[in-house]
Length: 354
Image 1 (cartoon, rainbow, N blue to C red):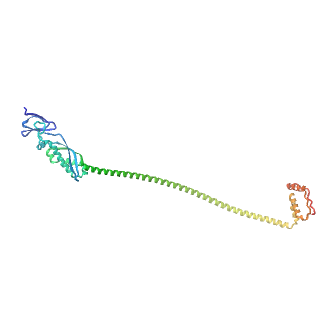
Image 2 (cartoon, helix red, strand yellow):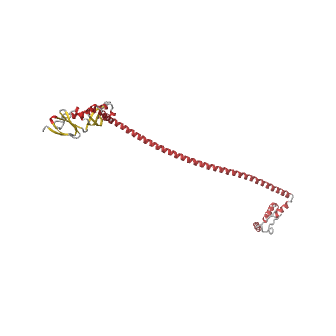
């Protein structure tokens, strides 16, 4: 009874029972009793396996890069795998009788590394650092189609590259170059910003100058309008002065004609008076002077008669011996002179020697 044992496999474990070198039963999740001295058990896990990897490769420009990633696979055809590798369980069913199950992930990783090397050697450093997705796609496709994977009955579920890093020295050089490029871009951005600010300031100044020019043009138009208005006013004033001057000229012409006509009239009047006086003088020439004097005295006022009397006295002064004029006579004469209508009663003068 000690030679019979019981085995129970997990649902994702493919178990194969060999008896006398022949497969007696196989399948996933089997459980049965078996005779240990005559039986060999082969156990293959069908679960997916994650295998991390990291290895260094050289790019086309001879720069070393480290590639870190993870490979996920599962055993799709256990019979193919067990035909090439030993997955026989140990006698106590607690482990494998060989180290082949531990070598399987490394074989797959090695195959992935070979394909990864082929891809990396086609690219330069900068392209390799930026082409992780393309590298993953090509390597996964080539790995799934590789002969080794097909012979082992492996299915490639996923391949991911977490990082493609250069060596520390190269990384520092790239960082310095990128840093310098970023600084240049920052300087360029500052230059563009300042240039934009200068352009904006220039545009503002141009707008201000254009505004000032427009204002000055408007002021000039206003001044020109005022000058035109003043000129129109002056022209109207000049027209008014010319009209006034023409009116005054016409008036002066009429005045001149009037003066000439008045002069002619006065001349004609003077000629008429002269003719009348000449005729009167001609008449008086043939008349006795004493008669003329008497006619002249006839219409005189008393004061005029007194004056005429004194004139006669003065004309005959050489013939008068003495002339007495009393105060009473003088007062009476003065009163008579002040009152032309007062009668002269009698002469008070008594000339002697006439």
